[in-house]
Image (cartoon, rainbow, N blue to C red):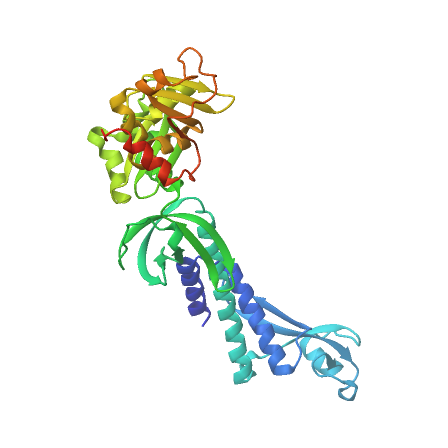
Length: 389
């Protein structure tokens, strides 16, 4: 039996990541519980479990009294004659350890002991799963779509299930059972029924982690992701910086013939990704962020965190983007409020002079800032001024 028990403990430790010591503690507690159920009390019960052989012994610590007639409670007292059968040197008022035969326990006591062990195993398993996924918080994992729960989706991550809430799903993405998808772990909570894991497909850091996985230069610290702006399911802009002058940050992220970035685009089911160079000069950074539009001039005010941008007339709609998306993402990427004008608008507008970009903002033109609350009406009006490039 001891050998079989040891094999069972080894299997539990390996398969469920439960420490063997906690299982030994569960066995000890279960035996104490069995004694309490069988005898009515167990305050003086001692359990000894050999960690090497799994052999166990039960003792009741009893006080020695003179005769059988003096024994008021057989669970805590023992006569001198019986005590000397265990310890020949026993004296009155000594405490001796009297062995308890667990084979004499009743069915109910045995069942309760079994339940104690099973409960401990469940608790330890939940704790192990929680610790495993808590360390992966704010990282990405691969999961398998299981089923819809209302408008939310249950995702199996291996040892636990996660919840992909409706507001963390990308609009337009359709998930079917058995689909394998990568998700970003937002939060891991410890609940009574096990860990509750919340995941996302819309978080900007999902894209960041995907680049960290696919791009060796990011993983080893040669290339850094300095900023990221995302409109999930549509477009992402990411600004990168190389700590090695011999390494092209954008080229490393894009890969040969776009091999690296295309893997990420495929994982995001066609979401467009613009990779641009980070620059400490805000003017250069804004120019890079507005890519692929060509820029005539950028006047940035670092104190106000605002910038005025002039583009060729035929590039205005490209700089603004469909429904203002390109300019909006550029504003989020750089942290600057961006006012975009065509050359004609800039020349005709009072206060928007190349030589004096600190003048008051002009009334016409388009402004974009790091604010998702720009109205669709504004964005649509901006994109309609010029035909799309």
